[in-house]
Amino acid sequence: MRKCYFDHVATNPLDPRVLDAMMPYFKEEFGNPLSIYELASNARNAIENARSQVASLVGSKPSEIVFTSSGAESNNFGLRGIALARQNEGKHVIVSKMEHHSILNSARFLEKMGFVVTYLPVDKHGLVNPEAVKKAIMKETTVISVIHASSEVGTIEPLKEIANIAKEHKVLLHTDAVASTGNIPVNVKELGVDLLSMAAHQFYGPKGAGALYLREGLRIAPLIYGGIQEGGRRAGTENVPAIVGMGKAAELASAEMDERARHVKRLRDRLIEGVTKVANVQLTGHPADRLPGHASFTVEYIEGEAMLLFLAAKGMYIASGSACSSKALKVSPVLLSMGIPAGVAQGSIVFTLGKGNTDEDIDYALNEFPQIINKLRGISPYAKGWDEKDESHKCFTT
Amino acid sequence: MTLKFVENIKPDVTADIVYMMCPMHLLKLDEEMKHLENGQILEIMTDYDGALEDIPGWCEKTGNEFLGIEESEYFYKFYIKKARQI
Image (cartoon, rainbow over all chains, first blue to last red; front, side):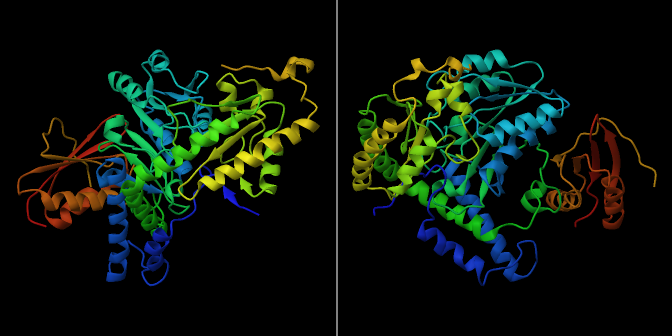
């Protein structure tokens, strides 16, 4: 049976060239970067080389890159670290309703500590209105966090406009660019952000390596105290092979980004065109301003989980709900915040394509997926339509 | 050791290590002082209490002049004048 991996926003396969770069640091170059002998300085130099490679991918200075263990850690560190470091200036933070759990739950943690959090609404495409950001800013606001591109619906947010507003009001702007970095051009200076989170495994690097861009001169409270690693900002002996892998993956992403994006965008457009021909299937997220390899849909009258199981049985690996946590969610808060009824949001499905996908994969998906939908609708108690059901599922939240 | 409090000192270089723990205060101090000329003043901003003993102690040991500290709302500013090459 054909195997098709359509879940690149959950994670990417490791590029073999990245693995080759990492291998010496698993084996002979095992030194602790903090030690003073040659073995250690090799590891230290490898980390600094990776820092330059990652900085070059996002247009920052190497000294502005702090390595972490993941995108989630970078998000926690960015939002909580700045909110805590600036709490003497104010205890108000702003996040959008499009955020990943690592931002939303960090915001909830801050609320428990006495901070006030404003959750920005989004429109039907998942876009944050910059005017809403402006209205939400108060004298006590210290930091805003808005995702760069949604992993769930692919929408790319108008960060530049939001950054201008943040600057005008002297508020810092953090962005979760985990899904976008390495896949579309991300330049911290052009976007105008003060902090930016990224993760290596979203651009064919290893899991266990992430980074936070922290604009020069900003104070941040560490999440992990201990030694002097990462300039005293993030203690713990560095995951040298993973950091080296992140650097190599960043270098490859810089060089191959246009070609990769062109390839997945063409396949994505074919997929969207084919899948939306099926009745009562809607594209979610923005039709144009979206990640190049991202195709997300709601399929009415069916549960996402059921589709996943049937698709997996046909060798297609796909996500439902928040793209990397289908186990954690029943109904996606992101889809609800976009005004999609809870019942319809149950039938969400997310295809995310990568450089390894081919036209044959899309042919296969377009042949099998409509059959699966028809089969499931045949046995669905909701197949005749929502009108016969009670109204409890129509809980719009804005 | 009694600490000397000072006001309105104009530093030549400032190092902001607020939120960074031991031993960043000594590493940063050492690194920044290497780049200063004799007679120039370094300001270190830190919220680490251990620096209250360590920085004057480091100055004594290395023969540099500890001018004093200024307290702000939630961190200290240390002023060190370079008196000799390190």
